[in-house]
Amino acid sequence: MKRLLFLVVLSIILVACGGKSQKSNIDPAVPEGISTPDFLITHFGEFKLFDGVTDKESAEILFEHLDLQRAVSVYLNGLQLSSMTAMRKGILSLGDANEVVAITEDFINADSLFLTPNTTSVYFTAWLELSSNQAMVIETPTNNLGFIDSHFFEYVADVGNLGPDKGKGGKYLLLPPDYTGSIPEGYYVVKTKTYGNWFMGRGFAVDGDPAPAVESIKKNFLIYPLGQKPTAMKFVNISKDPIDTIGSMDARIYDEINAVIQAEPVTSYNPELLGQMAAIGIVHGEPFNPDKRMRKILKEAADIGAATVRGMIAYPRDKKSRIYPDRTSWLNPLMGGYKFINNNIRNLDSRSIFFFYATGISPAMTFKFIGKGSQYAYAYTDNEGNILTGEKTYKITLPANVPAKDNWSLTIYDGQTRSLLKTDQEYSSISSYSKDLKQNSDGSYDIYFSPVAPKGYENNWVQTVKGKSWNTLFRLYGPLEAWYDRSWQIADPVVVK
Image 1 (cartoon, rainbow, N blue to C red):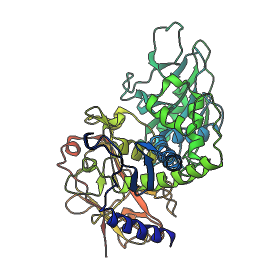
Image 2: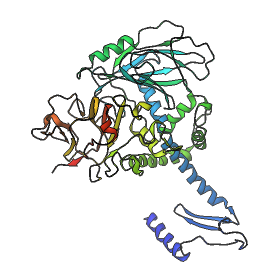
Image 3: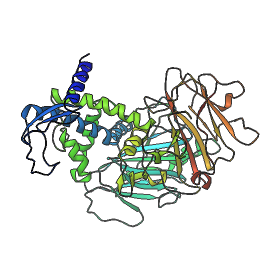
Image 4: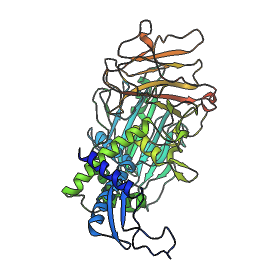
């Protein structure tokens, strides 16, 4: 009621003022546009000035709005830091840095909370903690796609099939920011800007069997300080012992962002983003202790930020995000590549979308590698632009000859967590590894998504949950030219009535 009354009064004022600010104390000799009127009407409220100086009461209101705006900006631009805090916490819940490795020996299921994982890869992940001037050795297994990301979730290096070892396995020497020691021969040398770093690798199943990849990883993956003898790693099967690696969406996100800022050198991160964070009290070397007023602002900013990024991912405004220009369902989660930059312009929305939805950043996810690497397309809406819901039955058609040298998959995720949707099925996915897929006479596949399997298509079905939204990610490992030139196109989700 108060808001309605405000809008009515505001409308009357706008009509009375001709929809414009009142001009007062403006010297007609001064060129138009330089001076600011003494009375302004905005959707934030009414503000008073005296001859170019904002009055104290109006300034205090404007500063409240400024704090809110900056807090929303920190939310949207700091999602990656929150996500990394959660990833670090999840891994270290299993053991110590540089010693414990989380591995999906039986593929990952919905019990562990991970942003958009694949159910056909053998994941192995570790938290690397470097100390001052101490280099760390990482020995990698053969035939894997791996990378190292910094504590700020910035790309550091590829390892494995698209790294310098070319999938043959190798020794990597990770140098901390302040390293001044000698660098021995026989290593692939990598320098990072942060002491904390995240390693993620993906091994490949053999005819759907993860065991060979698991054996190779356990036998060959090692982390140890340079100059010291390696000791056996502690592997924890998170297919059976679930962990949580997802960052907060409420006001706790600011504490998670602060954790990264406190842990790393102030010189190692973007000054512009550090300025945004400092404006709301997040400063390296200083306690983050917002007062009651600021906590209220941060809560509101988090609510706005959450609603905004959840809208961004479903309805991105940049048409270049569309995989197919004339269709809106299938979208590119990595607009602007792994740095989110086109023509020296950073796509801020794309960066927020990606780190809200996924983890791990590497050129291998974006560059054109025929028959190598990976490509992705996600869908939040059907062919008519409506949100995908658990009540309806949908069909996605994959035309014949899916352009993937290694494998492909369609995996669905919970709209809230962006992790695997928890259902009665063991895995919320269909892939080229799935057994007894029903193929159409033209070689295509019809994949169904619904609470109950359509008769005759039980093996081509992924279960959804009534009352919940869901989204899907289409992956190609070893993508072929037909994916890049769009001569092969996956169909949009359509409602089956």
